[in-house]
Length: 100
Image (cartoon, rainbow, N blue to C red; front, side):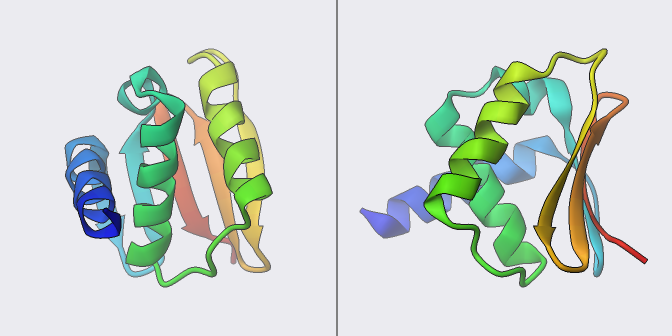
């Protein structure tokens, strides 16, 4: 059910969380990358909810999950979430941050 999916997303998110503020979330990249793609998607959705971001389209969500699975710890990327928020993937962290 949707409720159990959201609860699983919250639990996974809480397990990966390094730091959270009003304008940023930092998650453990290696632990996130070790999850299945469906679980990564649940974490992405939960992170977006926590920051009150627009929901990514299915295509964009799959694109971000694919990048997370593809890039190992020595690689980095930047992904535009919405106009003023980006996802930075670097230094063993996944940062969802407000772009000043």
